[in-house]
Length: 112
Length: 109
Image (cartoon, rainbow over all chains, first blue to last red; front, top):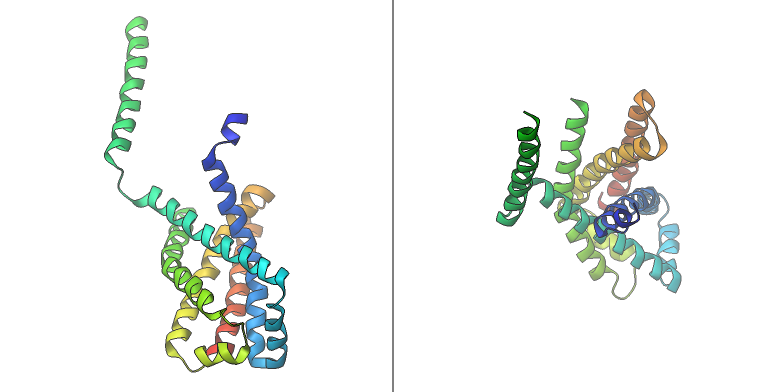
């Protein structure tokens, strides 16, 4: 289990899931602040001046990172699921089936 | 099959959003230069059919995408099942869409 959990693809999965949750939680706040343009423009400007604070800039950096990492992680997922397999991938998949047939065939020949 | 349709809706909404997200990040990097003001944002977006369609489709796609994504997480990590799971998904999607549509209208109308 320790080895499987250290696998980079598990980290990719966790990063995709946590970035997705964080972005979904951020969206209502994002939409609400923007909708102030219609109801309370002064308050919107009040929020926008907050973006001058170093801590807010750091948080924005974090959000943009989460968005980008979710985008690229998602593109990777789509590529894995939908793009045609490359020749080496097909060779390894065929080799896995051939190896399994060899092992089970050996077993079967011993069994009959 | 419901799960298969949700899976397809999740992937299709992701495909729709991929170019939107790239443009959105580009606009953010451009817009943040010299600070942000309401006047600057509204000057770019107000009365623009392009940004209305851009952000409008973005909001539709993200509402679908986030609702289905959170549905999976609620099922896998919180054990929510059955009707409660469906209701949660629809609630998340509809609230995000309503708030997003409101925001798009506020900055482009």
